[in-house]
Length: 229
Image 1 (cartoon, helix red, strand yellow):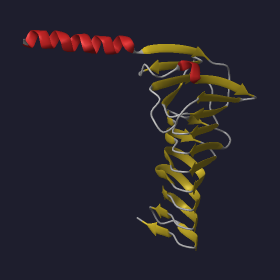
Image 2 (cartoon, one colour; image 1 turned 120 degrees about the vertical axis):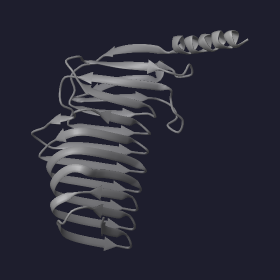
Image 3 (cartoon, helix red, strand yellow; image 1 turned 45 degrees about the vertical axis):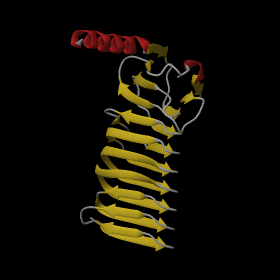
Image 4 (tube, helix red, strand yellow; image 1 turned 30 degrees about the vertical axis):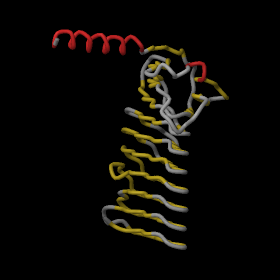
């Protein structure tokens, strides 16, 4: 009986593995990226230019997944609900630096070894979008979260400008930066670690927390908190 159960379990696992579909999409050159839809995507710097889509749920329809280009921007979109997980995972390989990335409608983006930039880099998470940014180096980094998204970031920059609007979180205690200009409007949280100066503005609720001993210029309008931790 135990042998039969073991065989049956193996058949289930084997069938589950076979049910997954992996599809490769060839990519063109781009410098900016927009991802729309509730699915995870991991980005690697590589000499390859392709996106690998792993379909994990049978109900996921790859006909709803589109790759479109406008000037230097690639938009990856899955048409449908952003409340439930779609059932696909995407791995993107790209040889160049991506100076602007947006995560919308629940997209979950991880960037490994984001790179060394000579100009401004920006990340925006909207409507539940999430970022994990690893090892980004730039003269100016902008991070914006709206409507419940989140950004976790590490690396180094002289100037960091985090903004949260209508809920969400930016965690940047592992981002080495001399100057932080932080703003929250209508709730949310920013955690940062400026070395020299912090300019902090909170309007209508929210919390800006910081570590270290920077020179602080702060303004609170209609409620909110600015605190050292």
